Image (cartoon, rainbow, N blue to C red; front, side):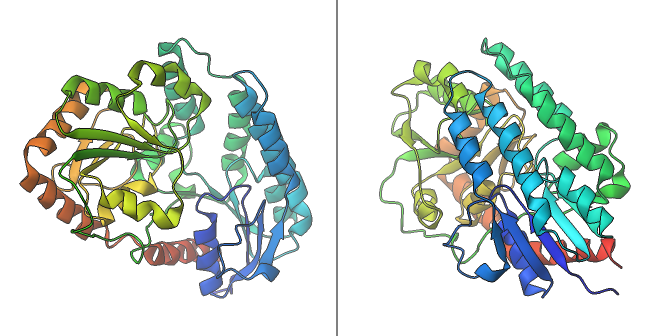
Amino acid sequence: MRSLDVIISSGGKFHAYEIVRAALHAGCLRRFITTIFDRRETDIPLQRVRQIVLPELLGMGIQRLPGAGSMALSYLVRDNLFDLLARRHIDGGTILNVFNHFGLLSMRYAKQLGMKTLVERSSAHPIVHYQILSEEYTRYGLRFSRAYRLLFRKHIQEYEEADAIAVPSEFVWRTMVEQGVPEAKLRRVHFGFAPQRFRPAPEAKTDRTFRVLFVGAISLQKGVQYLLEAFRRLDLPDAELVLVGGCFPDSRAFLPQYEGLYRHIPFVPQEELAQIYHQASVFVLPSLQDGFGMVVYEAAACALPVIITQNVGAAIRDGQDGFIVPIRDPDALADRLLRLYRDEGLRRAMGQSAHDYVQQFTWEAYHQQVIKNYHSLVP
């Protein structure tokens, strides 16, 4: 078995720091190329880090421009500039591990050096992604920017040229195969959670309010519009809907009509998020497409029953750890919420089941999968 010598390149945080930890713990991290390094990640030695700050700053500036296409344009500029500049930090090794849309030029250069290449894809295949979101935008009288087609071309080209593609769920795997990606290229990984941070606190909840919690970007893609409609239809006494996360521009298409129905917390530091889970009764992630949804496991680890859609990749067992419902179905969401509202015993049983089940999905277990996938490329 050949020794591993890995360069990891990511133009955003995503789950990149956990991949870096996997390589670091296995003694095979050559370099971590990123944008603005998070200095709170104190266990990653700075001498292994190469920062490329300019693309991130340009991207943030472009996102402030008016117009529906500013987000897609920012991705085009940021990701491609990062990819171009990252090449100068690639100087050999056995594997280059890049994130989708950040690595085509870097991969081509790495291949000239004799390296194997692996691409991280955490969402549905770009064509499926585009179909779902363009349909949803049309429902709300919006136009899904055509600039995303340019983004997706590069995504797909990376699949064609990579030696392997890492995907986090059966949902993502299925969409990739349906769109013609060879199964032989796919490598399944299973994201995790930090058990030392996310765990039950039975006495932490300070009231009897039935609290429905959502954590994530408040956007059309996350399906928040259907959760809001379900909660409105139920009109439950002594109940509260809490939305935690920043608002995407497209949220303006649906949030105003539900004003006063929910409580919004724009930002919660990761180290304080468990306290939010501890005050909830049920966690809901109604995404139209979500390759994994790490918040699902965080909530489950805190002994919350969870409700997700069929297009959320987290491996939750329907009827045991919570419920799995179709996308775009406020009636199904309302039905499952009402069951949990009426039956505190069911809430507790499902929450405990969810907690017990996800203990196998820690970041430590994820690290082992990452290294196993590396060895499959460099036997």
